[in-house]
Length: 163
Image 1: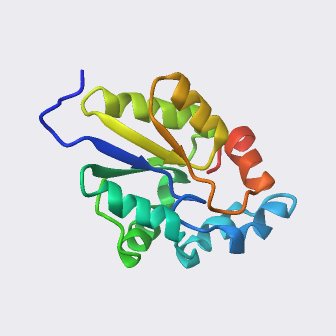
Image 2 (image 1 turned 90 degrees about the vertical axis):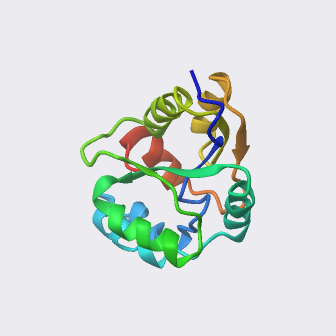
């Protein structure tokens, strides 16, 4: 059961929610997909103003938690990116390097674990399948619609368990 004495948490996805991945999408159009280059380019992602503003707003009443499908090997770059763009400090939940489950499964499992100890006030994510499953599980969701949609990224999230 969630501890109501602590501040609730606001959970934010990264790619196409806080970080604009458009400049690195071309790596996913290649066959085979160039995942090393895709993730290596992440530190150059421009921030998405709408997502950053929402994270800063939520941080006034909630602890911010980051939940990404990026692999664990990207942790240092991701932490540095969050700090460089003035985002609130908070725990960062990442995919294990060899975990290839769809994002909707990995993220929902972590959301449920978080909800066991804290009130999850909101999940902010661009992935419709993640959002659909989170809503069905009873979570409040804000669908991040401020970045350009990428069919290749959506396929990668669902079929390849890569982000």
